[in-house]
Length: 137
Image (cartoon, rainbow, N blue to C red; front, side, top):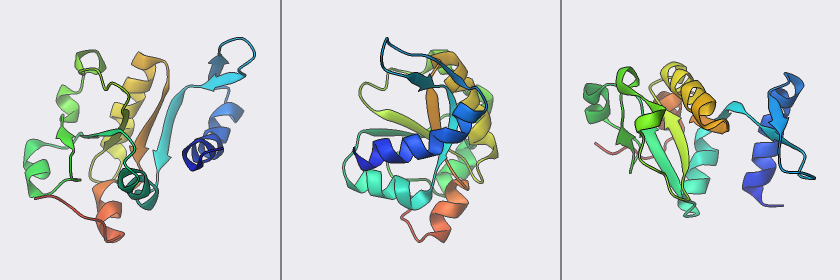
């Protein structure tokens, strides 16, 4: 089992307890639906490993200009429309904001739209910086 899969399974357990699952393909067990968080160091490890990730910063353009995760794109929450997102290909979308409040809202919208599980950064860019991880300016 890959580290990523194991982490997602552990993180998804609370969703299953809340009934946030739907039947998946026959014999595959339930598929998790909803919003999960990812710790800053776990995200950094995945990025460093070269995993295909599309980072979406849902803060304002001004906040984004002050500093953002390297490679992130800026789609402010007030303009965040899951139906308007370009396809992510084989990349997993991970959302973030300053503290994780706005990214939770955007992640919920995206999870409902895609009928899938969506990750957002726990503690936002504040937690990322506290962990000593790089910020692009």
